[in-house]
Length: 302
Image (cartoon, rainbow, N blue to C red; front, side):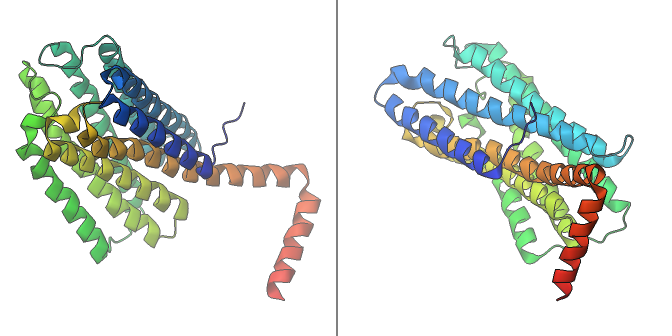
């Protein structure tokens, strides 16, 4: 079976996940028994988006020659999202048995290792893309909107760190968990800013599919950082699944971020798939395809 995701399908999946999670979240504020339903739906949403992104990331990587920086970059993207999928499963294993607080159950805080690893791998992936672009000797010409977005991303970091006591694992008895959690905003801000720069570079060189993928990637990381900031500003309820309406804002940001990332990969992969289809049609019926190409050229000239 060949995976052929459509951008519209990603949009519908995002809408369905948002509707289901927001509904159960609102109900859990009145009926605490619904808290587990929200946890499971969130896990399914994030796991599905990340695993699908991993599959597409690997297929995109295979479009590039062995040993190239772009192949390395997309392989790293694949690893990064799959590590995050493992984090989702790890969290669910604890939360499904009622272990929500890392202050009481310290092992839950080890999820921060997976979170930090995912961000570092994505940063390395963007670094590999940057290296591939530098071989083309392209200059970086950032626009005012680019600097504005990077500035907003940077400003979110101290907001989260200042309110670190409201973060989910702030009560962990393990110092390494607390330090990794505090480093999270920085590890998010770096690849998000790199994504904006690479988006502008790829747009300048006319690589539409790559530009769109990088735009979605940067937007996804920016949304996740915004979710952290919203959760920290809203207080403890902003980090608690099903606790109150205050956690709706960061939750919506988190869900949207994962599916926007997938949307970027869908657009990038569809271009490769269309190119492959064109080559296969040409090889199977060269004479007819050449005739159609001549007709299209003549029509264009007319």
